[in-house]
Structures are given as structure tokens and as C-alpha cells.
Amino acid sequence: MSPDYENHAGTRPAAWRDDLTGGDDSLFAGRPEPVNEYTGRTLTYEVTGRIARITFNRPERGNAITADTPIELAAAVERADLDPRVHVMVVSGRGKGFCGGYDLSIFAENSFAPAEGAQPTEGTVLDPEVQARNHNPWGTWDPMVDYAMMSRFNRGFSSLLHANKPTVAKVHGFAVAGGTDIALFADQIICAEDARFGYPPTRTWGIPAAGMWAHRVGDQRAKRLLFTGDSLSGKQAEEWGLAIEAPPADELDARTEELLERISRVPINQLVMAKLALNSALLNQGVLNSGMISTVFDGISRHTREGYAFQLRSATAGFREAVRERDEPFGDWKRAQFDQPKD
Picture 1 (cartoon, rainbow, N blue to C red):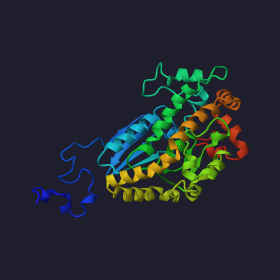
Picture 2: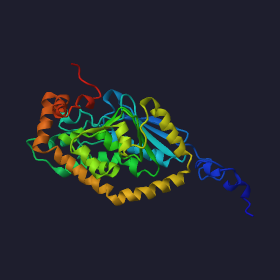
Picture 3: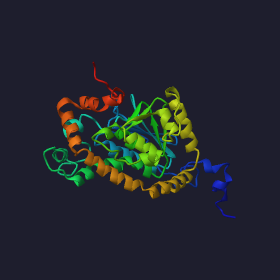
């Protein structure tokens, strides 16, 4: 008999329920714990028990996307992926909703030039002045400079799909436009029944760069949404298979915690193997190819005659007025705003 028999995991009741740091035979025995929490420019990160909580933290702007968002999201996901205590990560938003898309004030009204962020960009393809020049309606557009910029947003958001461990998006209020590019990369979406999902920019000036709609809801339903720019309620998202559950808004927190708790009881290695096996089907469906093509087409949509008209209207009359003119014929422009203008 092995001299280490007394310390073997098999001698403890249900030792498989330990996390990777449990027991004297753990690979991590005696090693310090990773950082439990931090606050970034666009989100916060916190580990509670076996759950990593990533929370978008720009509630005054509807958690709108900035140049920092994909960088910080990918870093937080990587931190959780490497933490031996974490079994599952959940992404949510503070304030009125999950994410209202790209920040209106720094993209449409500023020639699609993202503001300076935490990452040095001067003199690179991410330089705001370079991108502003590349979105000049009277200039020459370089589609690959555009792709170099937009693909980095996509790459950061897709960390939710490509992480080894399970990821859950908890959506309340709204996940619209670029916000859906983030949510649809999560392994599981749980939302309030009155939440709102949609990509209104397909009416002009946008194609979902993530390319995930058909993979999540199927061909016909994806086309139904993207041919019209219409949105789904949280309840409809559940019925269409986009969300796994859509409880009443006041039950969303409790139901999410129940789901996270159930996932976190499963050993990390089992979770990773299950996710890798299931992701292989998505990869064989062409998820990466969908994202590449969709990102290129998103750039094209901003450089058509119609796209330039929308951009110039945003720059002269303001983004909200351009959105009103775009969405009012469809009857949903006010519901697209997380901070409606005063009458």
C-alpha cells in the first residue's frame, strides 16, 4: 500500500467536490491566493467562493463600450480562467441595463474615433486620429485598417466563448447593438423577462461584428431580426433559445445565483472538458469565419452612401436625432434609448 494512502483524495467523502485548492494533495497546497477583486476603467472584478463576477461599471452611460472594454473584459476572463478557485464566471451590468452598445459620444459623433484608453495607441492603427481620418466621408477608406481596429473589440468580447471555464451573461434592462456582441459570446444567457435584445444598427450603419446570431438562434430567426433591426423581449429570447431562462425581473438575481451555484458544484476539469467538447461543434459551424466576415461587413456598412449619410447626420444633428430618424418608422426608437432626451 502506498505510504501516502492517508492523504489520498479517495479517503475523503466526496472529495471530488473540493475545488482545485482543497486537500493536502492539491497542486496548489501552500500557494497564495490570486487577487480577489479590482476595479478597472469600465468594469469591476470580484471572486466570491467559486464564482468570478465581472460587472460593467459605467451605469451613467448605459455601460456603453469604450476602447478599454474589450481589453479589460479579456483580462478579467483570463484572470478567472487561471484562478484555481473559480469554477464559473458571470458577466453583468450595473445600472439600468447590461450594455447599450458602443459609446455614442466617442464613436458616431466623433467620426468613429475611439477616445484614448489605457492601452497606448499613438501612431498605431488604433490611434483615434488615424481612425477618424479613415472615416472621412470625402477621403479614402482602408478596410483593413478598419478591420484591425474592430477585430480587436471582437477578440476581447469572444474571450467569453474561448475561455476554458463556463461563462454566464446575466442580462437586465437591455443588451442592444454592440451589447449583443458581448452577451452572445457567453455560454449561457439568463435574462429578465422584460429585457431587450436587438441590433437596430442593421437598419443602417452596422452589421453585428460578432457574427453569432445564426449560431445562437438559427438561420431564419437571425435573418428575421437582422433584416428588420427589430428586437426581442427577454421572454421571446427564452422562447427562441437565445436565453436559457427569463424570470421576472425581481427574480433574476436569485435565479442566476441558483444557476451559478449548480454549475460551481461540478469539478473544474469536468466543466472544462464539457465546454471544450461542445465548443468543437460551434467551431466546426464556422464561428471564427462568421466573426471575420461580419466584422468586415460592419466596416463596409459604415462606408456606404447610406452609412456616410448617417455618420454626417450624427455629427451635425447629434446621434440621438439620427437614431430617431432611423428607428421612428419602426416604432421603437424611444425604447432604444437608455437615457431618453427631454421633450
